[in-house]
Amino acid sequence: MVVVSTILAVLGGLPLGVLLHLTSPFGLEPRPVLNRVLGVVVDVTRSVPFVVLLVVLASFTRLLVGTSIGSTAVIVPLTIGAIPFFARLTQNALREVGFTVVEAAITTGSSRWRIVWTVLLGEARAALVGAVGVTAVALIGYAAMAGAIGGGGLGTTAIQDGYQGYDDRVLYSSVVALGALAWGMQLLSDFAARTVDRRRAATT
Image (tube, rainbow, N blue to C red; front, side):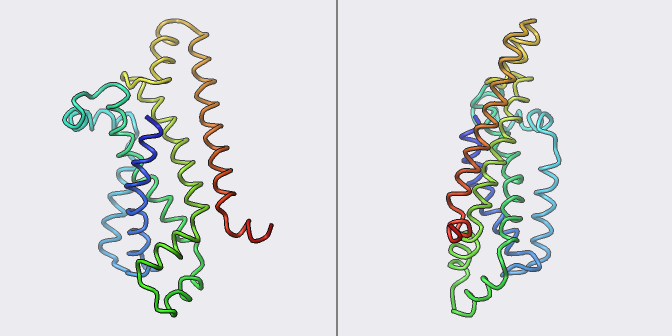
């Protein structure tokens, strides 16, 4: 659930985040109206609690995958909830790229696409990798919440077999497993971000 949802969230959230940055007042293609509309959609979607999103998207999920419960079905609301989350993280990462670097690329006659791909995304790649890690860790928590309505995974094990089954061993083991999974995912993300960080590589 988490791996597939993270991949889909990156595929959907990255271009959305780039578009948010480009159309902002400080972007390469300022378009205030479009940026404001996109910002409202992203913020409203992000503000919906995940448990509520599960219920609201139940019919759409059933139409898409044939069921609204189970691990496969939960991927749909996980992805929809994570796309705007990752989009904002992407926008923030791109905002941190120095304007002088972008300006230098513009003066050399680089196309908009080349500036986005090689300058913006290239300079922000360490922050973007970190954003992927943050998104994955958040999705681990969301996926566990989905266990409350039969979403499968460790969340269902903790709630149904542990809490409702009065088995403290299963309950606490599931909690430890979720914590270890989130911790391991964050460590992997931090390592990957350090690996691709140009600035760190240049100083070492």
